[in-house]
Length: 146
Image (cartoon, rainbow, N blue to C red; front, side, top):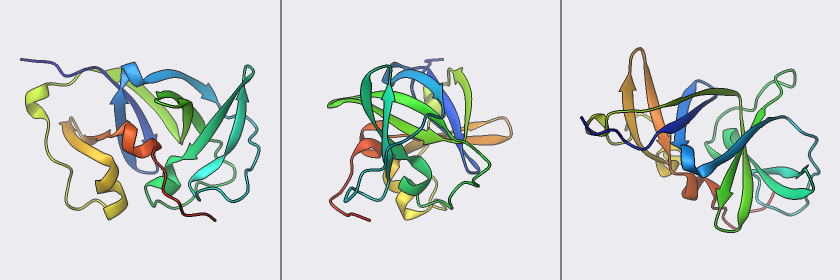
């Protein structure tokens, strides 16, 4: 049984998502954000992480999901990107898990178009579906502005 690269898992709305653990630098509690005018609508702002300015992407917006309630502070999954470090806002953090590579399936057709664009595939876990996020695509942003 060949194991795939370990995945760092996290929840966004009712989805369980995962990315390769090697892409994740750290997980931090929500930090104050500085809004940036005239940027892509999925950019929530910038944060200062120990002196480093980090672009923050709201994964709910990126996936076309409803906004989180004001009383539910998000968490940051800080990831390595080709241009530096970027944070994804998520609702909750899961575990680092190893999955059987043979169990990898295509993205579910029932997912929204925005989700299918960002999901590489899925693993059926006991009682839930783990969607593997294409981190590079999730961090790409188009030219649209607010």
